[in-house]
Length: 103
Length: 172
Image 1 (cartoon, rainbow over the protein chains, first blue to last red):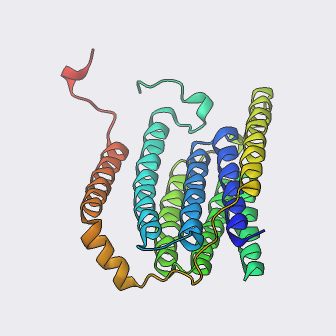
Image 2 (cartoon, rainbow over the protein chains, first blue to last red; image 1 turned 90 degrees about the vertical axis):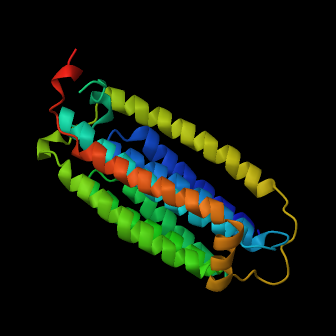
């Protein structure tokens, strides 16, 4: 097994852990963190292929991960703001009870 | 070399799995900091030092703080930690089934795939090269990311600070 395979297996496992968290947990914050884990798994793939790809001209993999980290930061900020807004209306952040959109 | 990768992988996956299984949210957030630091260690291992430091700054520094603030601001009383309901059990079981089958499919695909041999020497990217790449070739993308970040942060502030009071003419 080459290091590339090992990297890809690690990122697969990380993606699946994040997916499980996003699907199974009922706390909104944990769902958001599961999505962050999935993003991290995708970034690991980019870096693995950048490192072990057949040819590397430019540092495109790294640049892509840099932008992905920036977008993930924006996503986390907006997501947590939404969670706080929902909490203010419903005094609760469980997914099952946030069934009404109009506060 | 590969032993270090295995250790890093165990650190990332172990802390992520523990974080997703813990009942206490603060424990989860702190365990995720460990997992993100492990990802930064992976970047270091792969030779992407700049990204490793960016990961530590953004994830272990900024996002974890925002998450901890959100956890503390939306804190519930202790009895809100509900016992496991049947609906929750069903959901957990189906989530586990979906995740396990996805892991099996991707894992099988990855482990049987044959990739072209990697280049002889490891790629190198100094900070200077990354900076030139960002500002020249990807200048437009850099500007767009800046706009996205600005809009997202202003939007987050507006969403989180909106008061319940509305204009009277907004009322139905």
